[in-house]
Image (cartoon, rainbow, N blue to C red; front, side, top):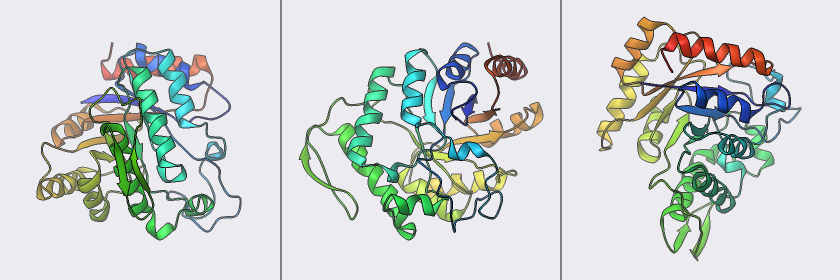
Length: 281
């Protein structure tokens, strides 16, 4: 079982490049950043943890661009994987986004994973022209279209939301397959979507007791005829050896710890303590 770090990026505190360097130097497997292009002031969508329009953290409105953030991290690291928890692909042009991700994978030497979400903030999605009730279909088409651009010499795609004829697009990713994980509630509906269109699941802060959801995902995965087992990234807040051992036996592939919004020195001390507790080098 691997361990990762997620930095809720903002225009204050430690930079993504410095945080990723700490992850790289202390033996963490993956470094994650989130995405919000903007937060509409007036919203109908409730935040999943507050239950209303209030936000649990003002960094939602201060979030850095994830791909710029990961590009800066790529330039100063050599080992740690680079990912999103989570990105919102439907807020972008899929052809341009495919180019951005392929370029990052090319320049980083094949270290990119893609964590995606359906988007709880439907008001934000609407500003990008995304129909809230069709966002799952739209995300599926975006991923299928991007995979075509990443893998086919002459790529094409025809769908409801994405359509383009035979096209050339380089660079291709270094990896034969860029892993796609979905950050969403642990429900049967979401797990069926994952089994059809992704490689695994990222839990949410609301998914505290994950044993039953993990087993449900594994069953749905097998019933869908998928080979192997789904990747499962579980959010955690304080490392507990017994719990981590249970999660490892359950099939959790990576445990993800959040970094506080603090200064460079404070984050460095925190990461060093965390790495020590987890037995990382």
